[in-house]
Image (tube, rainbow, N blue to C red; front, side, top):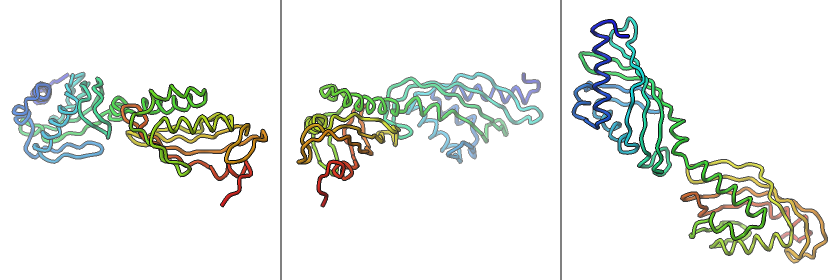
Length: 273
């Protein structure tokens, strides 16, 4: 607990700042922040009060953020520093970390050290749970779930279920073919199923960017109907594919495929160029 006038003043100054921050009262924030204020923060560093005010406005616009003070403690023997722990809450309203606005409620914590000089804050050090915040606004989980659902539907030959997983503008980019719609892709998948009786074995699935998922798969099947001009002989075949999916609103809108088609053709005794 504060034991000196300077300790009491530092804690009171922070409470004044937090009240102004929550009210988006930038005039009062200006009164409690020094003109040469420096904010030390992992990933970026702010120099000057105007830059800091801009950062606060950005936080309000992006998250409609509010802070709830958990604890404010003066640094023993320093006299000019106060440590604060704050719970931040808000709503994801604008793009951040490369992710579009989700409208989700978010919550994260920050621990800060503030230095006071002449009755104003002139320096700050902060550690925010930005990784936790990123996970809350991330589309990774939804995108991964969609691509997993695509794999499951293909394996179970539920072709019509793919309609809910793909966007209306879907385009498939593949060296073996170039289709412009999901209906065309379903025809190709069904023909391959009928000829090779394959199942998909998922080797790896991971997010690559805010709107992309990478999938590595192994196909295993049996040649049971004519394919690539070759009559079936019941032989077992396998081939791999590396695929990149681009998603919008958790629906697949574009795909790039690099499959070992040449390896499959060799297993089926198809003459190669």
